Length: 138
Image 1 (cartoon, one colour):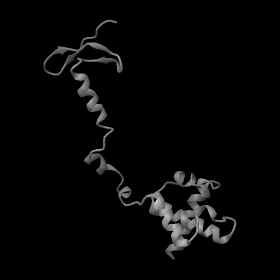
Image 2 (image 1 turned 60 degrees about the vertical axis):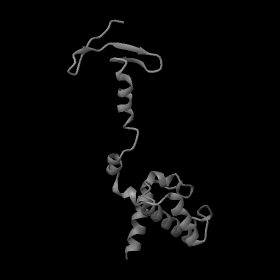
Image 3 (image 1 turned 90 degrees about the vertical axis):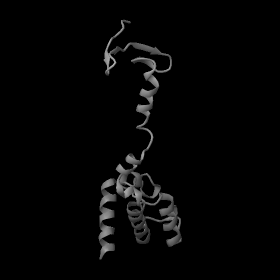
Image 4 (image 1 turned 30 degrees about the horizontal axis):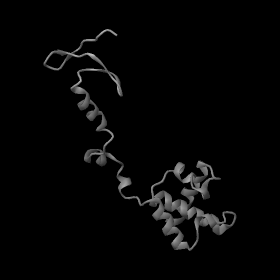
C-alpha cells in the first residue's frame, strides 16, 4: 500500500498509514494512537458537563421498581393479579399508568412492555393517560 503523507499541526511532520494488529489501519504516527483513542473514548464517559445536559426531568424521577412497589403496597394488590376485565381492574391499571408516566418518567413504549399493558396500543395508552389525568385534576 502506498504511504500517504499529510502535514500535521505546526511541526510539519508527515503522517503515515500504520497497520495495527487489533485496531486496523490508522493514519498518523504511533505516538498519537493512544491520545487519539483517549479523546475518542471521552464521549463514552459521563462528565460533569454531559450530566448537566441531560433532561432536567430525569433528575427527579423515581426508579420503576419503587413506583410499582409503592402502587402495590398502597392498593394491596400485585400488578399481575389485576383483572382488567372489571371496572376496578381498569381503574387500577389506569392509576398504574399515571404513576409510571409521572413518577418513573417512562415512555409509552417502555410502559407497553409491562405485562398488564401489552394488549393495548400506543394510542390507547395516550388517551387513557389523558383521561385519567383529567379526572385527577377535577
